[in-house]
Image 1 (cartoon, rainbow, N blue to C red):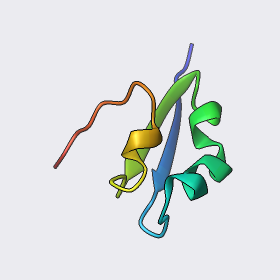
Image 2 (cartoon, rainbow, N blue to C red):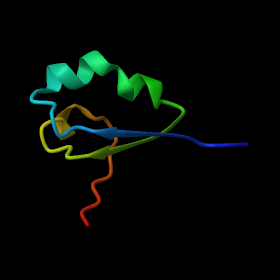
Image 3 (cartoon, rainbow, N blue to C red):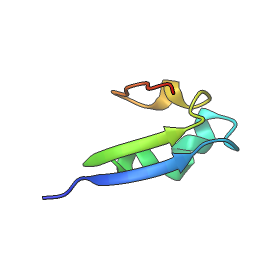
Image 4 (cartoon, rainbow, N blue to C red):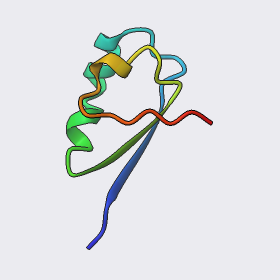
Length: 53
């Protein structure tokens, strides 16, 4: 099998509404959504793990 990985850079996203419009959480339901600059949208991501580097 394989794991679907979606990478999204949220640098220009200013609100949770803009994030929801992208429907990335639904797209990644059967995989992993990796988000950079996710501070503005973290509250809208269910069951997420925060990793800071």
